[in-house]
Length: 304
Image 1 (cartoon, rainbow, N blue to C red):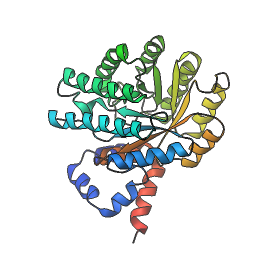
Image 2: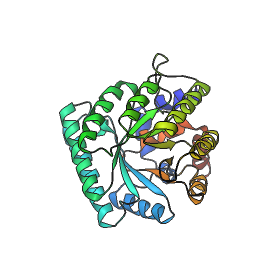
Image 3: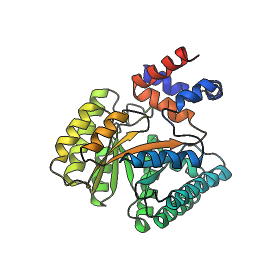
């Protein structure tokens, strides 16, 4: 119920405006978002790489309804990749792209063109792109665009959400194509007809998919903060060589665990969002984990 309430709040324009304009909110958001500018993203990347962590940068924004906005997002990614390259950071950093931010709902060819330009910039900089997965209505489109991109940019990564009932089949397709696959639980409100609703079902599905990817996946990216799932993944990883998989966690969430895993010799990538449109991202983080909501409310209550 709490998760549904928070996700509903993420779609309320008045609430979004109220929270987004509160100076206090911006102070709290700094825990989860690296900043609003390219310079902020580069700074955060350098700090994380210096600590032995890897980075995946997400320029925040989604559900773009204007072609000019989609073009601006694509240019922002290209500029970011050039800056990372100039600073010698692309060995430890890639970018994550939401296709809805670059025109997926406007025109498929426009979206694909923007995605190609970002992939070209990433290749020139010596790094890669992962296509984020969004709500279930975009899954077929996202996987279709992924397949086209991987023809010329085979390193382009995919995301699979364990709460979707279809994910087992999608994982098999991605294993056959030898794709990099980020496995996460999923953070959108989905109907029961397409998604598991209980935490137990979602977790069991995650483990099933994790076992499959760790056994036969080309490069599993284990995106979870759940200590039980991290332990299961670590056990499964004992049968794989170092460097053939990685853990992924969100910027600002369980940073000590990120460093512990990295110190153990595992590759750990920090999903690092930046940009002005942080509201929807923040609300999904609150919905995913009640502890995040408690942190936010505690900060609001105690900040003077």
